[in-house]
Length: 220
Image (cartoon, rainbow, N blue to C red; front, top):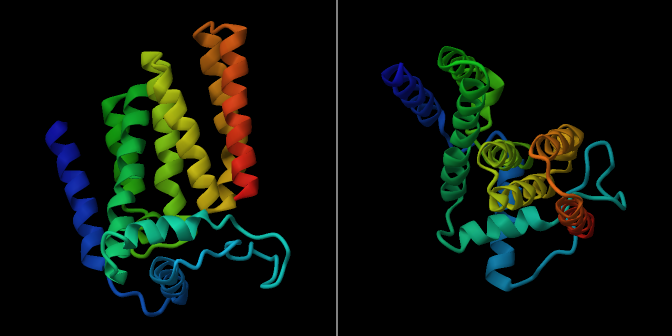
């Protein structure tokens, strides 16, 4: 079964790698690359991100600008468009691994293999790795948040909870659609704290961290 797992991951990795392209048919990654490069080159920091869906180009409410800063941070390593493509490519392996870990731990190893097989080769999922874009780039952070939340449940290590909170709100900052699953994440958190019989003080500190992260998201 372990050999089969490695084979599935290798095939999923190769399947995506062979499909990588410059993606000239999609203008949004090129737009985002130019904005991030402008930030890095001229130190000219925008105050707002791209417009929200159905909100219009000149609508007052937009996505947080942190997405562009993250891209600029990656470009600080290598100012090349394809470098961002590869960064996103490797980040998209995180959801694949996360799906296997969660399903194999909650159900069985065989179920985990089936889940990673169906997930890895789903057409919409594999397209996420082909070009960086806000809805695609948020996924590794959100999946990572659920994974660290699960590890916190298993190990009771508080630093994993902090990482989970940070990862979730980083993902939501990249694209606000991530907030759609916030109720499920929060319910899972409450159930975990209840099962661990945490003190009222720990609840208070946790809610304070979540609230501060939410304020940072709205301000961003």
